[in-house]
Image 1 (cartoon, one colour):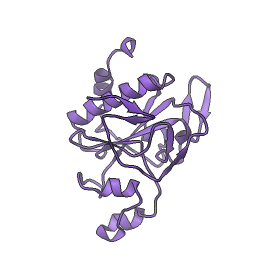
Image 2 (cartoon, helix red, strand yellow):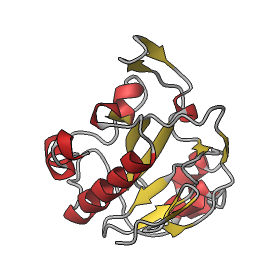
Image 3 (spheres, helix red, strand yellow):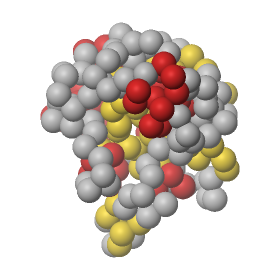
Image 4 (cartoon, one colour):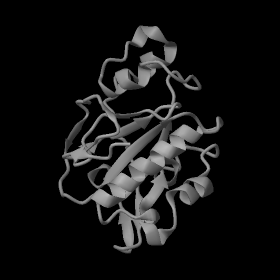
Length: 192
């Protein structure tokens, strides 16, 4: 894989610009949030996720789309079931993925909100109950290595789920995501 970057663009990802982003208030990137998404729910492939993140979702194409077409959301990356990666937002910019959430920052000994300000969001195409693919784990590990090499404050202890930071509203990536396997594939702490 080509891991070269231009700005905060990962060279291994296909670039599709989302308008749903803005400047980070600081240069700090110190948290990675793992999400899962499928549109319509439980269905994989197709262009609906890209359409949502680029404000082009057509409400009449599915009843669920009518409920969400007004949303202005994005993530930095989407990893498809086949492992292909799409980047919507430069990682030096703020994507709109975390929503109302909070996270206990051990380094600052306190709760932090406004997580989009300092996090990178990676969406895995999937849902809470369908196992994620080997190809997705491989791409997630490669993207995580790239992010850790780019942002020194980001380490293994600062990778978490959307469900962890918004437990009353979110469940993703859910029990189908194998955290132990992901960390095993990520490699020993000493190598990062």
